[in-house]
Image 1 (cartoon, one colour):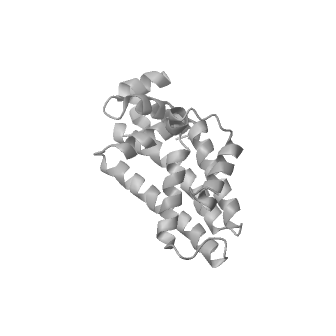
Image 2 (tube, one colour):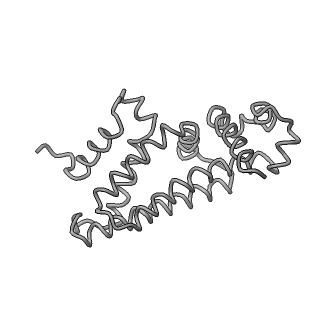
Image 3 (cartoon, rainbow, N blue to C red):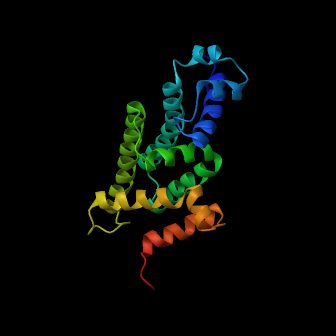
Length: 196
């Protein structure tokens, strides 16, 4: 199957899934959005569950692979963190449907086993990449060593996930540019919440 056909199917499907949810989306609607027959869609995917899983895998695999590459590199922790924040912030802007779909799935119980495995794998890989970054930061004296690495990694991951998405931008009426967002989060992570 040509990559362009695969991506066209997933681009159309992720938009529909993110608007209507899994149960509210049909193969017919995906086919109509692509202006193809259902039979043509079934030629490429056995069913709706496989399309849904492919929508999740495509974006999450790329995002976490980028973070794993960043974690394995030799940049100072602050530069890695800046790139991680900017990447997550921009991901939600560049791929709003995928990001909305991801948030929908994370925020509610979901009964597709393959999708649960995809999300579990994503979070494990993400947490391992951040843990590797934090361990190197502690070892190099860039981060404090009096807090367990797993807790630091979880706190950073959680903070970034909840402050980089379009929903949070909308709720807070935040109109920050990417570089401003990165700067303020770095200040918060480095300085904490206490008044200086």
